[in-house]
Image 1 (cartoon, rainbow, N blue to C red):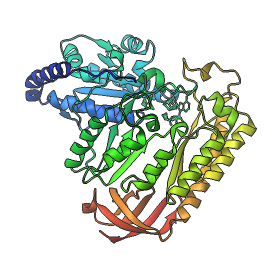
Image 2: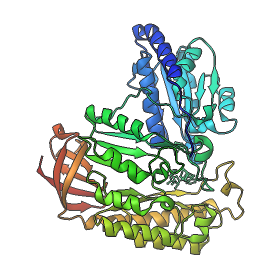
Image 3: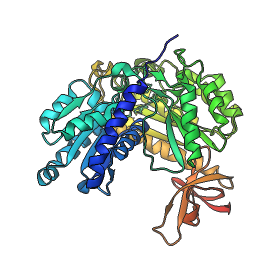
Image 4: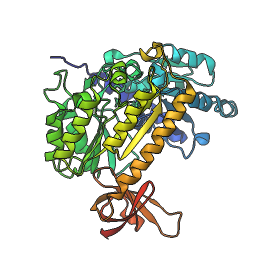
Length: 469
Ligand code: SAH
Ligand code: SF4
Ligand code: F3S
């Protein structure tokens, strides 16, 4: 059995003391922050912690980047597109720093955890003074203190990938929240940088997860999304005494918790216990984000995904039998090294066969240090582009098809937002199975549950009417 390292209460108390001391200087000066987040839900969740610290330190949130005294980019490096965007963004802040030298500019997140990047960044951008990685968020007050004292620092150590509990957080969303159940990833899919930048896989203690959910629900949140790179392997290392299906049952009885979502699911670990849990637990939503990546067995093997097309399809089939209204969404990579036209067509045929509600599709992007980046038979950019576009066209047709079966559907929707630009105010929100519907209504219904009937479809979306609030 494995045990996880935890950041000690003493260390945390020390950071809280530093935060309090800083707030005595910062608060009276009315200083503000702006945090911009790139990448996935993990980063969104980390930004909530950093913003939580900034509030404890006495900053308030700025309206925009230009007026902020502290600007931070939380970065992603999963594809090279993300990197290029970031460099442009940082470069653009030089003028701002020249005009107002007291502004502190920081960069954090996954990209800073890549070999040598943090130091390189400090060198290349003299206007950046704070750089830190993904596993030192618990030390944010002391890092900021150093910078406020005039030093420029880069902190990217791993601290044995210890888990930090009890950090502050600032959440924007009053309806729905992300809750980490695990950190890191050990799967080493051959194309993926995440295991290198996020460290080894470790699961939080079930009681810590539940405590966080109880506190969220008591603050009015009724929908939570359990987060992990591979939630189905929760506790597989023996460190928690519970597997994912047990965790779902364990947290599901929190009074007032109406919707439990989770992501991402790795097909290799989605077993019958999880299928039963989704079918049996009333507040677990009937939606699985199940990245398939490719429909071809040779490519899946080279990707080191450790399942076959047949296994994937059998999960989909078993879930549909157990949970008839379930919807699937997925991630797909095209143009992986060695992907022949035939292999690509296997992905196309899988997409036809499954009928995903939505697919997030990507052209393969070589990441330095990964196995796939060193593979021969890299696919040319024009071919990747052409395959991506063919796949997107197919998925768009499947989305329309999927939408059509919803005409007449009645179900509960959690109102997420409103579009007030047209003649009538349109509210929107999701059914438990992740399908989004638009309907006319009053914005006071925001964050509430209403019953909506689908009356027509409109290319990408469902349109409906409220049958009661
Ligand atoms: N842990 C999740 C995925 C996290 S990354 C899972 O395994 O399902 C989100 C998505 O980015 C992946 O599912 C994959 O489709 C895509 N992705 C990751 N690395 C990539 C790369 N090098 N090139 C293109 N897409 C990539
Ligand atoms: Fe990357 Fe694979 Fe881990 Fe997902 S499971 S984060 S794709 S290595
Ligand atoms: Fe990007 Fe890091 Fe997520 S690399 S996809 S932000 S885990």
